[in-house]
Length: 495
Image 1 (tube, helix red, strand yellow):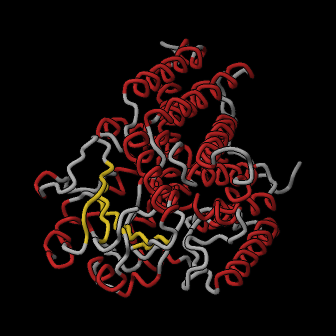
Image 2 (cartoon, helix red, strand yellow):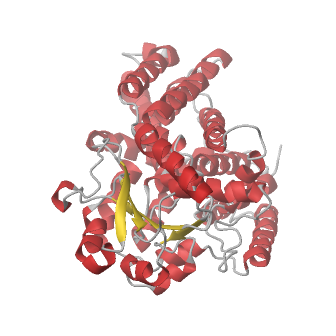
């Protein structure tokens, strides 16, 4: 017996999945993700990592603006993911497709670990895997090109290895998770707590964590002169600690849809069940809860893909809660549910995702990204010295061959020296502007008539197909949308 193995309190009964049934469930994960690609576009922020990866593959280093005076700047909080994409960029395929394929492969592997973490028990494994496959928010994040699926897989692998007694390898995967997202340090803490009463195992876990952590810091410090990402520094300038962020943090972690609050008592029952039993799911679910708790404490500016692990944890807790309800109250009356779970639920989940995906294709790819990329490539090719200032720098940066100035300061440190984008425009006089067609972003530009007189609107990329270049403020949304106005400095002669 492996002395490092964490034994469960008791062996759970119930029917086990056959190899064919497990394959069916994993095929559903794959099918749901492929269908989701039709309904969900790549995130704008994913293109930032793609640009870093492309520059790395071309020998310019992992930087956003090769050759700029302020480079090198470490923007990314996911250096390992960027490095992996940089290696994959050498393949003869579009990097966007490669990144989405990588994430889908990670999700299929995660689903296999989820099923095994449930002991292959037919009912909870089926419900857990299918919820992971078909839940809209998870599917949207997965095909969005961000690092979340890689992060979740590393966390599940670390939790599974820890429970299997392979604590050194668990330390390796937990440390790698820290290089994919900074929240990985919470995973290290959760795993460390599992081993707290076993000093030798804790040491075996901690050695690779320390080695990989110190090596990562040394590499980043040597390459960039500072191991803390510029994006972290930039976000520290944003309004933090706002209490109005509590509600979205809770909803995105536990119930993105109002109907999920109805099922939350069952999920709560599942949380209790998973947290009281040693095993991979206890570590993973505790990790998800720790992430949510850290967000509630700091209340930072967060984005949807931050909640991939917390939301997956909630869905696994819901599956565990359903098993408890079934075992205690329904087994004698509806045993067929467990016996036929994969055959009953899998087609339903896949059909639901198919209906949504086929009836709701995303307009962002065809109406925003495609024309924006074509315009950016053409303009930056004929005007190689031209600069473009943008707050959403991802999609435009992926296609723009020249310098992209980031008004948010995530990749461009000088931006943090200015109180407002208008001040940046006055000082730097970029040849082009990419402005989000949002009321609060356009209004200051409209109000500064002297500055506005120096630029003319020339393009608009909108998912609605809108072409109005001088839209009235009251027609613009009050919240962010992927609708962009492009301005050219008037003294820049079109070619």
